[in-house]
Length: 259
Ligand SMILES: CC(=O)[C@@H](O)[C@H](O)COP(=O)(O)O
Image 1: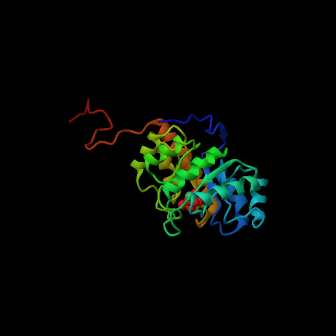
Image 2 (image 1 turned 45 degrees about the vertical axis):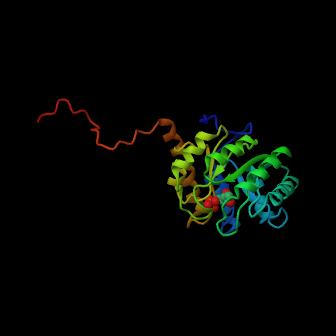
Image 3 (image 1 turned 30 degrees about the horizontal axis):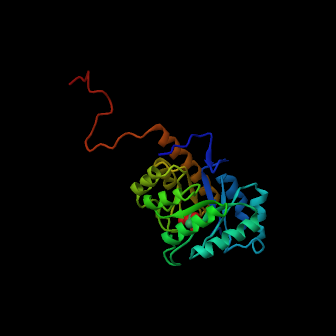
């Protein structure tokens, strides 16, 4: 397992300033973005190349650039390796970055990753010189295959995109962390701050959240809560949790009792 010291998080040799990454989809008004960014202080912000073209949502990009955030274009909505590779190339052209959050979904209903197309796209993009961060299932075998073809991180889902169900299978996330040497970034399904804390306690290097923040009643306050959740979870991971016992163990000494 690869533990990440906090000189900060390194991905592909680049130091990121925060372990909370932000997805911008679903924000009720772009005007909320500066307050959300100030509260989240995200290490990366994803932008969808298919749903937000560099020209059609100039205000979002302008605000992100103004705030000095590091952009991570994604291939959201792509259903095949071919489409994802093309979208990544367009993103590289439009945004001038080799980084791509690779999403290849199997269908528009579940939004679950298509493992076969994902691996194929990852392999092609690495060959084309991209820094590839794939959104994947919580399958440790697939995570290892993605790392083996050269992905710079793997991003397993906690639960379906936008569901807010949190981490449905914590054991699987632990298994992914154990399976790969690259950073594991929990992506999708987070609902609240404790989900972010749990991801870090399980050994993730960072978390990506969109819905939990953008669709909260008060997005800036939830952004701050998630940032603190990430911080708390990382500290707890490092501190080492007590073992879970099936029986009671007195927490104060039994010697010297009066009766
Ligand atoms: C893969 C994907 O699209 C996610 O990164 C999404 O942007 C975040 O998922 P949530 O909206 O569930 O946080």
